[in-house]
Image 1: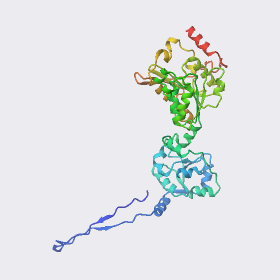
Image 2: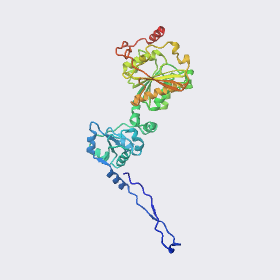
Image 3: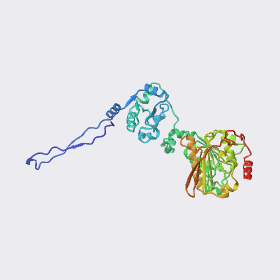
Image 4: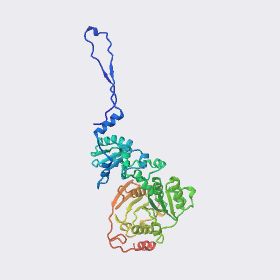
Amino acid sequence: MGVVPLTKPQRVLPRPAQGPAALGDRTEDAIFLKPMPSYRELLQQVKSEIDEVDAAHAARLLGDDDPPLFLDVREQDEWDEGHIPGALHIPRGNLESRIEGAAPDRERPVVVYCAVGSRSAFATKTLEELGYTSVVNLAGGYTDWKRNGFATQLSRALEPDQRRRYSRHLLIPEVGEEGQLRLLDARILLIGAGGLGSPAALYLAAAGVGTIGIVDDDVVDESNLQRQVVHSTERLGEPKAESAKRTIESLNADVHVKIFRERLTSENVDRILGEGWDVIVDGADNFPTRYLLNDASVWHGLPVVHGSIFRFEGQVTVLKPGDGPCYRCLFPQPPPPELAPSCAEGGVLGVLPGIIGSIQASEALKLALGIGEPLVGRLLLVDALSTSFTEVHLRRDPACPVCGESPTITEYIDYVEFCQAARTQV
């Protein structure tokens, strides 16, 4: 049974008179109004149709090895003032549209609460009507919970202006406020502020990644502007790291940008990677840097979102130490120059870095949030000329000299010499 519906006035037609005398008589419709139930009556009816537990019982359930889901249906300002530890927050007005994404298991027990147990009673009934099989209402609500001295949690929360800025993220069950706070705490390092680093930097900043590092020793050149969208004509001659920082900070004041105006080398890589980064986005345009970054990331245990581009083609993969192959598993030796010319030598469609760099940003966000299925052990090949996407499955090489079972490379080498020697042998 659901809540008693509002009832429309009923029009009742009286029986017509019999015989000739009825001719000429005017018959009026009789209208009878059925009174609508009050809020109190609706609440009493709903409470008679649901199960409730008191605060003491709910506290015991929370302490179980496999506790039920505690669902807080109060408004945001109430939640910010404190809530039951581990509770899921969905305001009552958003319950129907968001609960299935946030709690897809309809068999899991749920304890619903609000301030005093009224709004949550209606929410409990709604969940039952949506097919949730084991739902109870917390009688007395959060007020009674606190009055009994049970544990409460005061969570860090987004500021009102941040809620407006990231509102589209907050609507996604896999992100929500908790995920957005995680992004604001995240630290992502970009290797290069060029074709791939530009779109990645913009989207990571827009998403609210709290700290973005940029490693680049180059300056903005006119030929960069065809694809490196983080820079502009007025920045010609300016260091790319500085230019990217200015653009990012003007886009989102929540983001702190740390720049390294230097090329990644064996001498500085440990210092740079040792600053507590969560994810590295590889936008390097040369093989010595890629092999150096690979070895360092394996030894530091940091995931790398690798991307590369040439003319109409690009590729993306996630190199996560311990979970999949490293760059050396894929490419034990660098290819000869004629098979891997640079963009300066072979050219690139201006929009292609935007596609690949955006995919890299997406993968980095998934890693920072701990959601989805990153491209670990998968290489995504993109052909912009035919608009095709191909996925190649990759395996870790047990004989890899860096991440294999018996590594033979355990310290940094001369990566320029390594790449030149490998190409000479080919």
